[in-house]
Image (cartoon, each protein chain N blue to C red):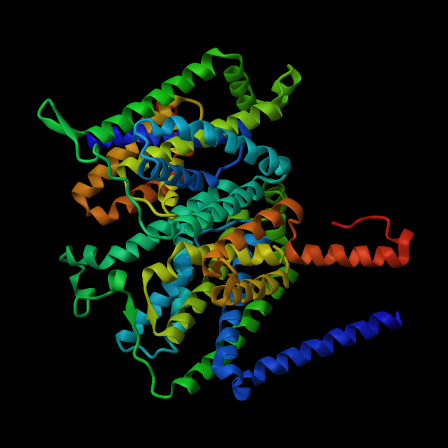
Length: 354
Length: 284
């Protein structure tokens, strides 16, 4: 008993220390803002991964189309900001637009089950990307819609859109660092709240057996759509913040399939359907991406730039996880724990928990 | 005319998908990777080794049949009892890895195969037809006819069909279903590689290239229904025609948009495919 409590307080202290470190990063200025940018991206991706997890993990609806929300959030912000709407006001609007778009394609698509839903979302994602890529040209050919173009530009086609850069860029970046940190905690809180409540229970029931959930009175369609809209809202806000942080977006980046892939991979790597899994997955994802994109292996004869390897790493991780540990890194951790305990207590741990 | 020729190719690519889904009830996302590899292998064989482009598929298809069987035996089989979504994710991982290996080996540059046949055309009834496209069409149709004969008239083919209908019952009557699944997966992969190598003759390609074709394949499979080869051929025709029309009416860049939108609509509105639609129409 005593040992467990010390363990808990030990964990708590680590948590506090990490949090304090994260809060202080912008003041310390280590590595010339490098850590700050890395932190920003990590927080952003934790938000994305947590948001995806609500639909994909809790309700078990694997969506390969979440980049649509991210891109829509980013584009909403840019388009409105370029037309003079206060930029902070565009953040909730971006979330709402993404959420509405989720309703739009989620309502029909969520009637499909499992694999079919996944395929339909790939289709939706790709179709949306192509639409955004060509929207300007389409509008130009249409007399009714021409008015929406400002100097002939709405989405900017393949060249994308640019936001004006502020004067004090480092203060601006620091502001966003804290902003996205708050966003991340908000997302985690929402995820926790969903998981604890009736809503989450309903989603878990849908995940396990949709028909059974229906018979015990879960309105499966409404639950799934609400989960998608909630998820879309958070992803849309993240997209909006991303656009404001980098000042430049184009369809291939924000609507691209890699973005959707990232949102699928992170929770699965970390541990699907859990609260902490998506955090872990996002951290691993960012660290792998950051380390791998910059590393260069020099093996004497062959010089290998690892930047081209990231998909191999993620794909390999995905295959290994599905084959050996469907609960992701959290499952690995639990297994290790069990194994260690088994060594100590022996016969008490007879059942290997799933 | 061009649309009809393309439909033959689409049918080849889709039938592999339908076969794997029918027998194993899994959606093979790695199909895209296999098509892309088929294209690259064709590229190497034709441009580096100087093999006649019309003979390249003869080498590619058996090689990928073996690859498909190995993939099934060592990777896919392990999760046969798991929920379907995990097999989808697994094959998605395989696809990502295949894609990355191509990036490593061939870089991300767009490649195209140009041979002495590329620009060759012949006149037929007042329209000029590209020799390449004609060849692709004929090979695609031949492959489908051969497959139909195989499925309909050999023991193995019948076993594959019965496994697709009911794998438990097939097991009861003494069919080695896991071996059948392995072979069916191999054939599906071989068809994908055939489609990929044929596409390489017509389209330019890069490591990302399978994705849009994969989606088109799904669209066709759902349109045509999973049982009938004629359905798949018709589905391919519908898709190819609607693409051709979208170029005429909308704009060329929106061609893929139309097929992806069609996929989503078809999935939602007519899950039974065209056959289901016809059945419903007549039952009323």
